[in-house]
Image (cartoon, rainbow, N blue to C red; front, side, top):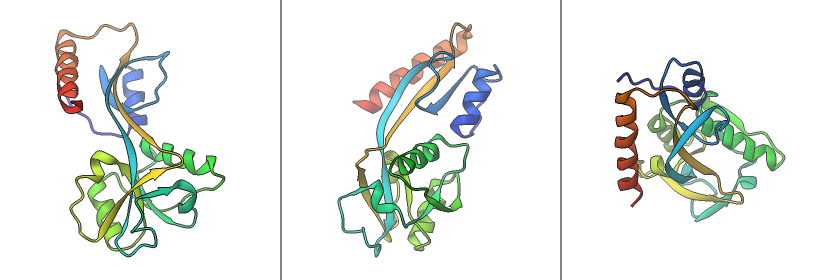
Length: 176
């Protein structure tokens, strides 16, 4: 088994062209091309500095972030696409001042009050820095659904079929 870490768009491309047998990506994906197995269903959350104007709130809408400086994931990451789409639906374009694929670096930048970030709840819960606050997003709620993908009607090797079973069992335990 070879493991490659890339953004969801790159992983989809590698699976589509047959370089990888399967991959883990954020949905939605083209279900005409891929079979999928849902793994984790969560929401995206907002991370702000503890002195940020919204830091004492429990929930924030996307529209309230219009004037903010965003620290975000690179263009290859589906989570970025979801955030930009939500902002555009509200009629504005987010100002992305820094990009990093490293969630912990993003959190440290927020702790230095260099901007805000939006990331999956599971990642938000890992942030231990006391200089940031985690806030739920609503209106709209931004889903973050992790799925495993492989090409439709393609042969999966025995090793990969066993790996799919293993991942399904692990996901069932995680979601209980």
